[in-house]
Length: 307
Figure (cartoon, rainbow, N blue to C red):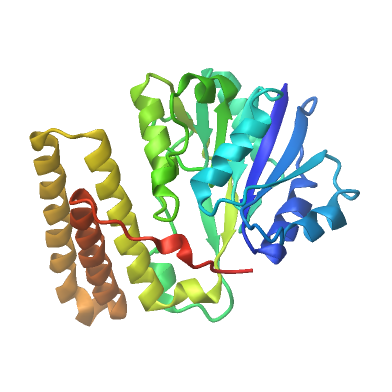
């Protein structure tokens, strides 16, 4: 079995180095697959080449370095798929600010085999810097819903995923470059994959940790992220579901989230600042959902966080 582990990176040398060394520690319960690590540098100045050159001899897996000068995550993701599609059976994506557990890839492959899944996705847990505000942890700002292993899902994200190569070959468009700086091109892709009849299955033990920089634990960034997530959801909904009834349902869902956030506000006196943050996040998310549904794009990824 041939697996390409693909990493999109842009001016995060420390994170990339940490990730590559963690990949060197991967373990397998039986014969390991034939792994190739593909790093796609989304920086025209090739800032990641020195890290790859430094660690290439240390790694027990072959390392391939590519440059995608066109700025935008979907351009780089598409380059990674193009590099892997002719030689790999499966493509795995992991972010350059993450660290996998040693059993990560083995768990993805095990679940893929058990369920004959086309896509397998695992959880991402935050790794916080010292001094992180208490409300960030309690509000679970950086945590997504957890699902049991084997649960069928209707979407996935490239921060922790394994994809059968045939899925990419079957899709007319892979990662949509219209979402180059808005984010959400992975959600858009995997929602289309699900609609095309491919299976997406959860592997709850395939865990990676996301290293959160201090710049992302500030309230302003948290609210901007909530707006961006909502904006991406609105853009995707407008693109995939163009009927009036679908848009009305999406808008009603947005207002329901707004109402839920407002109901949480009176708990300020019980749970403190967290209640206000929860309400503000909901307000920003709903604003993003509605503006995205109307076609307005928020380009969060013009700025790079972390090193």
